[in-house]
Amino acid sequence: MKIQIQNYIYYNKKQIFTIFFLLLFILFLIYENTGTVFAAEGKNITQNWAAAAVFYHTAAEETETFRMTEEEFLTYKTNLESRLVFAYSIYYNSLNTPEQAALEASQKAWLDCYYSYMDALRQRWINPVKIYFGVTGKERRTNVYREFVMLFLTNRITDLEEWNAGSYAKIETDFTPEKVDELEQKKEQLQVDMGLCLYVIQEEYRPKIKEAHRTFFTFLESNEKFISLISNNNETIITAEELLQVQRMDYLTGVQYQGCRFFRREREE
Image (cartoon, rainbow, N blue to C red; front, side, top):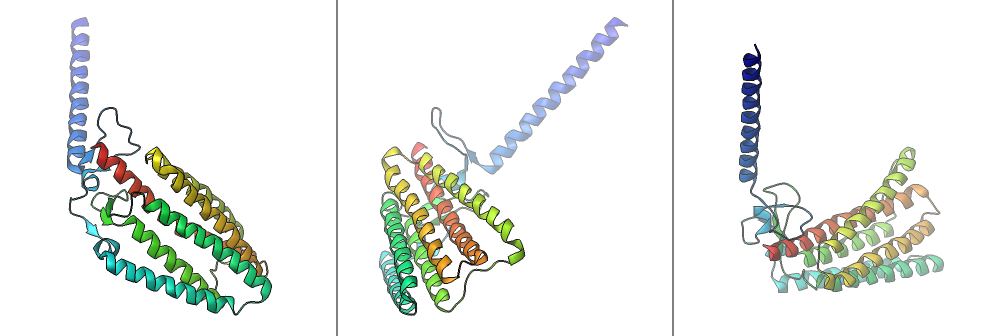
């Protein structure tokens, strides 16, 4: 009887080990198929990338900012800047004196943010890179610098033109308390994401990136004061407009973060 029990235990252990190694083999096949690339020994990578995202020359979708020539980009940028000046001037002249002063302060803070980001991104991100958004096969080749410039200009132009037309970002009044909480959560998450940009890039590039991040929150505060003035302190409009600004920067920060990871990852391979 004792021998039978021992044999039973032995065969059950054998089955357990067989299942265990089978599971390991399946996991190995999964990792092989997804093409996950791990950091070399001693390298500090915060997250693993799919192989297709790591290597820049691997085929991937191309954005408009990747495909356009430098001449085309400069022409596009110049046209947007001209449109911005026009939109600002038209709107500024339609306001009363206190509103003009508030818009002027907001626009100055926006320009500080714009040029600060341009200065930071010129350090390493003026050339195209491949970025990865967490889904294998969804990598894309883009230009982080150009994408920021074009979107940041377009967003500001849109704001000025819509404000001039009396149109503001809107949320249902009944949901304002929830949106206020969402706004605070989004701002906290944005700061975390900005911190990740600093963490994954070399020390020498961090000061300008950190300064750019700081200028955004200065602009956000200045813009809130302007919105408060033109909306007669309408909390719904103030919250909606600020949430819109944070959501926009959240996207741009995500692009910047992926650009930072590209340079860190590509060079460690």
